[in-house]
Image (cartoon, rainbow, N blue to C red; front, top):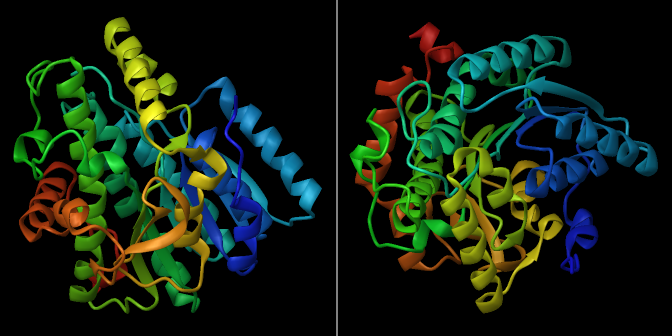
Length: 360
């Protein structure tokens, strides 16, 4: 039986309309990404750019979002862009398309790096990295750096920019390890813990800690580069335990055994933990992207840890309402440094295409 949505409609009143905002989001065909897109449409964003890998679900989601637009009287322009996060070339092409659209739209105000999958088998991307780290983190790093000209254009036009990473509650579950360099390195398949549950969960966990560590480090680095972090903000969110298609959507990266076992693990967790609808799970991300009370370095999560309306776990890169035992992994300075260093080694200087880098 589907879980009842309790907070989504009411939370729309907590966030102002955003008719001047251009927003791009990855992974918007279902689950949290789809409902964050619905939220954006109801807030009447100027344009919504949906970045998804090619599949029949893309057109289904587009049709439903167009119907949502008509039903609520929104003026949002909706665009679809092919972006396969497993493929570095596809990510670069998607970034080119984003930049081309945003030239005419006046820049990019919001990038929601939402897409993710896991836990999956111990396989590698075409670039040689763990497939979960590639999809959940590295490809979003690459996308973000490549669309920076569109951020600069929005700033030039006097508008605000937000770069939002999507993490997960897995960051503080299943083990107590901090970020480890081996998960960011090219390696042979099967050498990062194997395709059992423990290894697959740890690789997934590492990729989701990376999202938090990077968001916090980026907030610092924007300041170092001379950007006004009241105008361009690096933020993060997590959906709690939301009812999504995460595991079923990850089937292509799984052996049959790990796919079935992952489903069993999720069902057991559902019996032991509170969970919420995908619509309610989208609220921390939607709030981080569009609400007024957001500062660079903020991290939004559900109020009751796994369920509820958004609350700041971290504020300005420091502990707020969060559990220190949960947030120590992303707050760890060594982990932030490692995440930044390995990302630049793998995919080049983050500020390569930024206006301030060119000026320097």
